[in-house]
Length: 121
Image (tube, rainbow, N blue to C red; front, side, top):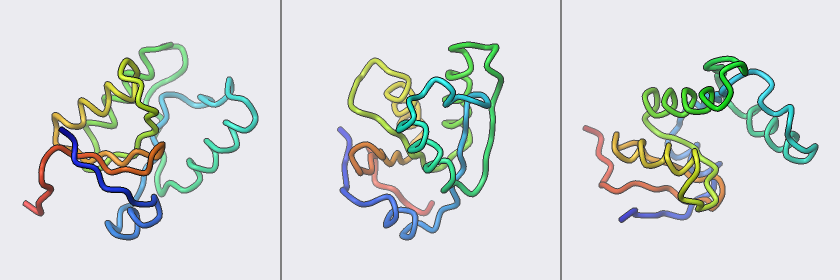
């Protein structure tokens, strides 16, 4: 069972004093987005302190899996945008993160998910 805590993104970042990194599966990921989605996506990307592009578009769906695995393996806290659909890349990545005891902050509903009591050690 996940423990949840309702907090805003700005409060979360300020409270934990984290540097954020955007991780894209390939350059130009937003090419197929609608205008509003693209603007929102670019706004979120613009808030990041660092950028990583994991692979290139020629890998197709594999690029997204590689990005998600990279995220889980290289973070201590994760931001996700998960609407609750259990059979999705976001859901799969959140489950992998939980196995590695990574906190997940869901930008969709403003909740922090973890299934253990976080400690400093």
